[in-house]
Image (cartoon, rainbow, N blue to C red; front, side, top):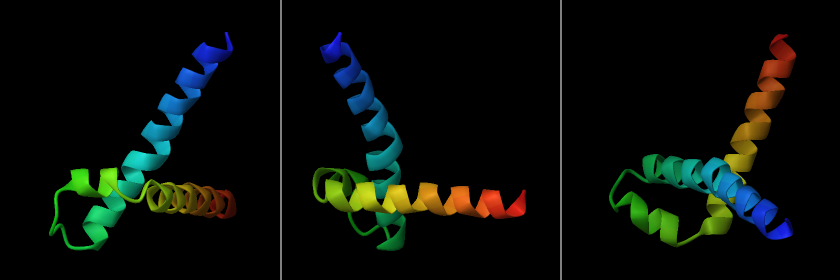
Length: 65
């Protein structure tokens, strides 16, 4: 059971935190390289950027309501 949960959380973490961060880095740096290069290098940066985006959007929505 632990193995199944690990696979599910790994997939969710990668889907929600790695890919959007790489996409934002790709947009910010002018699309000079392929997005695959941003996915391969700097997973920590992708994670931090996505996490800050999610937290910022959450705080923004909380202040509106």
